[in-house]
Amino acid sequence: MITLHWVYALAGAIFAAFALLGVADKSNPRARRTAAFWALLALSMWAGDALGDLGNGVLVLGLVALAASGLGRGSGAVAEAERQERAGRFGNGLFVIALVIPVTALVGTLLFKEMPGWIDGKQATLIALALGVLIALVAGCLWLRALPVVPLQQGRRLMDQVGWAAILPQMLASLGAVFALAGVGDAVGGLVSQAIPQGSLLGAVIAYGLGMAIFTIVMGNAFAAFPVMTAAIGVPLLIRTYHGDPAIVCAIGMLAGFCGTLLTPMAANFNLVPAALLELKDKHGVIRQQVGTALPLLAVNIALIYWLAFP
Amino acid sequence: MWVLLGIAVIVAGFVLRFNPLLVILASAVVTGIAAGLDPVAILAAFGKAFNEARYVSIIWIVLPVVGLLEAHGLQERARGLIGRMRGATVGRFLTGYLLVRQGLAAVGLTSVAGHAQTVRPLVAPIAEAAAERQAGDLDDGEREKVKAMAAATDNVGLFFGEDIFLAIGSILLIKGLLEQYGILLEPLQLSVWAIPTAIAAFLIHGFRLWRLDRRLNRADRP
Image: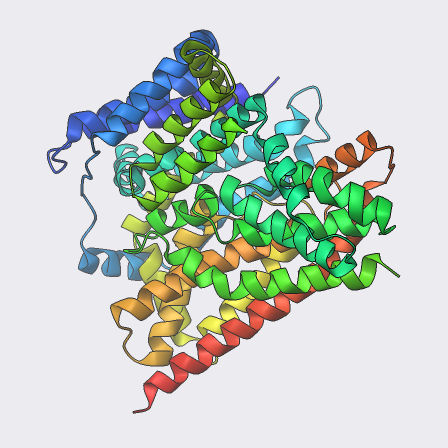
């Protein structure tokens, strides 16, 4: 059966290729350090399950040490005039190849769930995504008459642009696990429940919505904030004391948390990674554009809870 | 209460602009020690979680495809195409993308689009090309803003579409948590209440995109 481990094997191979191409990259002043970073990531993808918990911890130490000492960026972009000429030559077929990945992910997600013996249905989308990458690579290389090293070399260049931010989301997810182990959520919940005003429904609703957003900003994840705020305010006050509709309180409360996700560098995969990927000069450029949507929407969410959940 | 020191470390580390990976590790160590764990146990717990979260970093496998297409003129082609379309503005284009992204997420297809899959190769260059045509010439600041707005639009579409789907993680989390308090709900009862916010998100973000268009169109005339 095809499982997520096949995808990890593919990811490991691609990171290993980035490392091999990177170590030979004369345009990168810190070629070895950068290559070692991608090599460790390849090792994690390939052998993470065999390393043991402590082994993986040591691997993380290695990644962080390399990142903190400073990774370099190689170049190797095709000149603009050349790209312009190729754009004219290859035309709209380029979009077709670009759309292979999302379309394969879409079709695969629906189709693979019907093939339980062959493919792990729970991971259908990620497996389909990987399949889409392979199809796009083969089709692209054949049609564009490019050697297989070309996509890997160009991928390496883009990966260098992203740099250590590539593992920021995975690191934050791991920190969340340590926070859970240490009971950080309960401690915050204790603080919050002391801080809310007594006897005011509107005050409690605002505290719940704002609390979801603020705690999400701190933790980078509404999933971490939700159990804490719901235990501190949602259930005891909004649902039990004021008899709010639990479905409305919780569903919209979660979305108030999502407004916080738009505002925090802790949600790295949504906010910092695209800034790196789009080569923005301002690391927080994406967050800056989101403020104007997130704040009014947070106010709307709080108002919706107040109006809809308490008839 | 001492476990909250880890949060203080995160905030201080981000404010003082230390390397975020280092800050995260430091926060984990401080939190763990405050909770009475020994350093080796903390490292093992962190390593275990890191290994289990590997799927988060899988997305980078799309970069070779993006790199290959960009080396062969994908962004230039996107610009050429949008340049010929009359009436295509950055605001209208991103509003359309917002609607599609919300719609796809609402039927559970969250990973079909994204920053690596669609924003970098397609959405950002098309938005940039449309903005360039509207404003005549974009300065660096405006160009950055348009690209950042493309990424922001993807996030807004995803966040305020996905909860309409029944089987998304956050809906299942709500259901599971409420069960612990003896409140039994079906996922559908929860996900319908994501619709008002989804509409509000579309209206608010769509309004901002409309204003972006007005700003860019005005930049044209002295």
